[in-house]
Amino acid sequence: MVNSRFIQSLEPTVNKDTRSGFGEGLLEVGKQNDNAVALCADLTGSLKMNAFANAFPERFFQVGIAEANMMGVAAGMTIGGKIPFTGTFANFSTGRVYDQIRQSIAYSEKNVKICASHAGLTLGEDGATHQILEDVGMMTMLPNMTVICPADFEQTKQATLAISKMHGPVYLRFGRPKVPVFMRPDALFEIGKVQPLMEGNDVTIVATGHLVWEALKAAQALNTRGICAEVLNVHTIKPLDVETIINSLKRTGCVVTAEEHQRNGGLGALVAQAAAMHHPVPIEHVAVNDSFGESGTPAQLMDKYGLNSEAIQAKVDAVMRRSNILA
Amino acid sequence: MSTPTLPNIASQIRRDIVRMVHGASSGHPGGSLGCVEVLTLLFFEEMRINPDAFDMDGIGEDLFFLSNGHISPVWYSILARRGYFPVNELATFRKINSRLQGHPATEEGLPGIRIASGSLGQGLSAAIGAAQVKKLNKEDSTVFSLHGDGELQEGQIWEAAMYAAHHKVDNLISFVDCNGQQIDGPTDKVMGLGDLAQKWTAFGWRVHVCDGHDFDALRSAVSKAKEARGSGEPQVVLMKTAMGKGVDFMEGTHEWHGIAPNDDQLASALGQLEETLGDY
Image (tube, rainbow over all chains, first blue to last red; front, side, top):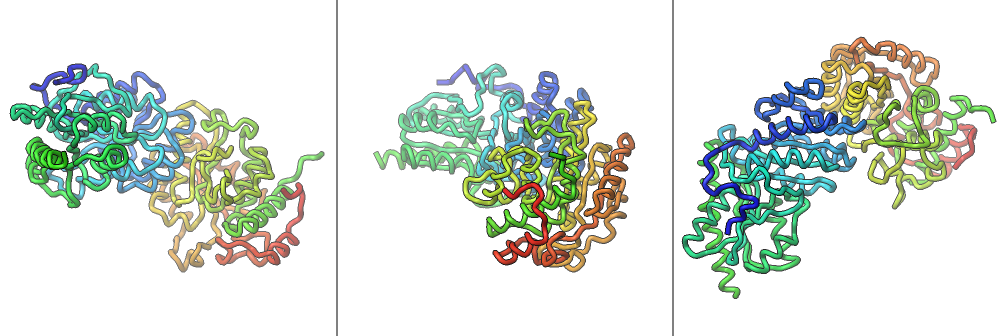
């Protein structure tokens, strides 16, 4: 059962990159709120921040290749009421500047929006130096931090607008490749609320980011085999909507998590923790298993590291076998 | 009651510092004692501030950022004596459930503090951001920051220095506490800083040099730095100071960077510092 309140089409005809959703969203934020400012560390084109920079040059700050300073300047800009959006690759938005984020932003409760593109393996040919797969773990561990990983272009645009209207530090994670646009532009987007995209009773698939579309594809394939999967889009990884996830697990009795991130410290680990506490069920993870990435096309990499629809289906089979044995 | 003079205030601040660090059996007296004059001048004479109604955004106020957060004792004493919070609260320094954390923090809501510091090298970036917002908001306020000289070994300081000059942040006056000491010894031995005046000049800043314990010299440096508004150049004041200033056995040595005096040492220190405003 597809939830048409959220899903525009399961046969999308348009592919767009989530970073372009950020760029469009940021421009809209700039129009809506005079206090919105943006900083970029020499990746304005890659982050799709040109539209904002051209429309509001007095509110756009080129920082150069100096990410630590960018985080600190952004923190300082909140004093006096600005809402800074920082832009660089996910790798340089997190690991490179963890202490700056920790002290100057998270601990200091600054209203900075850390906007991170090119997350995960789908960055592609640049290889492992740039393919961060640990960022969600680092950011979810920080007190005060909200962590959002939208599923497609439309949702990234929505998320960019939504975080401008909440007070507090946010990590917004998105990516480089063009991927199917399947979410409705008017879908209800609430920070911290899971979106049930498909209803089912046999297995729950909990996915975030680029893996949400793969989860939907997997659910359709599973349906032809008589398996009815529930697909949950966890666009907000922190705070995690434990209630909605656990309610689903109570109906299905097993869960597969899917994310473009390390298994350790990612969405899957958080779901496993919640399940262990509230409703233990068999769980399988679609995630990178304690390794770095490498060069290749996004599709090749997602295939090699087991982060696609086929991998999700295989994990569904595995978890349902375990579930049936347990039952 | 007549208004206390800056030297009188400074003497009481020094008493507070050694008593706080003694009371907590930990903390950083050396750098704190060396920065008493500059903070006294800023908070009791120079800065346009509103201690009675602290507000995080500080619209219309001058702002101060302490980047070398370990010298929190001097800042806490200054803030309390200036009326940001009750002077008696200084007795809670570094103790459980206190708003006076070992290093300054916003989480406990202590009035006067706008960002956490302690992990070094981050305060200049924050001060620059706040100064740019003053300009965006069309304010003529000034933003001040204070840094240790050892702290200049952090790379982020020089990222920030480059940025401030590039973006013409000329409403910012940064002080460097040039005491030549850091935890492991003299800066020259630990990691030589070279010619700091040349370094800041090369990064596009206007450099002022003064005696950091002389109110007139500090006042003059601030005045010249403020005159530079409109030049596009950020301003730095290299203050020659002595770590541990005012307590003879602490003065001029890194040994008192981060340790507390015992009871006898406290008595000796207090004997050298006149109680001018009443101890907490």
